[in-house]
Image 1 (tube, rainbow, N blue to C red):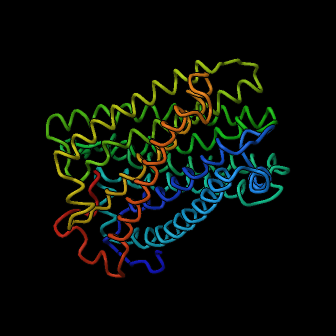
Image 2 (spheres, helix red, strand yellow; image 1 turned 30 degrees about the vertical axis):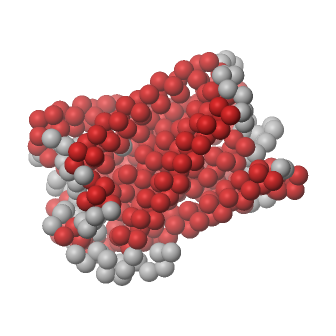
Image 3 (tube, rainbow, N blue to C red; image 1 turned 90 degrees about the horizontal axis):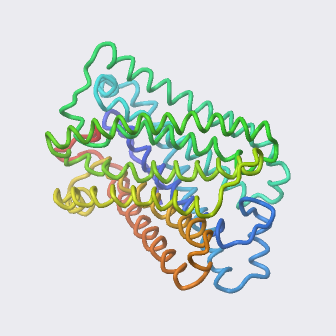
Length: 410
């Protein structure tokens, strides 16, 4: 399982960080089992002690779910770390090549935002690993929140440095090719900022220290607002270019990038809402959460249908996933599957069950949850399919694309 990895040199693309990102997202998807099925009274999230108690006294189905979650988190944590280390090494070497110099002079310069995007996922994943596998972590968690805020702030600073280089170049000297902007590839910066924002929002939902929670609210708001503004601009520019020139065949998976952005923003807003309720005496209600999640899920479904239409018309899966050609941009298909999985878990638990529309663990509850589980395991299949295609042999990428581009999402 990814025991040997290729050395790519100038054939490397920063979009390979999306492989690590997808594995990290699947780790989060398994945490949803624990988050919503394991009792954790007095805490906003389950910890090792809650999980271990279920293994001692819980029902057989719940014990099975906990074991599956534990194994799933461990497997995809390994994949995430393995791919992250490989990407960091390859990226360091890639920066010394002429291909890197060409990349930072093109639309594809924003692909570099895949680096802080994945690093932010790593910090989120590390917190999950601590909650799930480290006994007694919650007793020192208040000391960890400032460290987490600092880590996410540094990653956010790095993201803005990269964006500063890009906007400093194109807004002063031009050079942005609108003809090649016929995809939603330029949404990647918004995704990165949103991922930083949701990480910064976590202490607002979990810390009992008002100053920490307030810092969390302020910092996360800045990054979420930045993500929404930048994402909106990129969305209109990309859609206009696609209407004029058609969607880029190789970058077509980016039509689904809005889906994970919406999930991340939704979680950030719920974390902020919990923080304002606890610390600022702002009282939202279950109906507000249900309506918000319904609205945002509707946006995801809309983009999902649009992307599915284009991908089907272009035969993308038959060409780049199951067919003979390779495209690093295929990894952009993983995040939407993960994001919808996580969103459905929140929708059924915080939206439908939270508002009393369905009873928890009722037939209606399991119907929606089953959709999330089917989507999750379909995404797992996709990840292993892509990993086998791209990393299955030591020289798997020696003939990258066979006529395609290593930097498809421009």
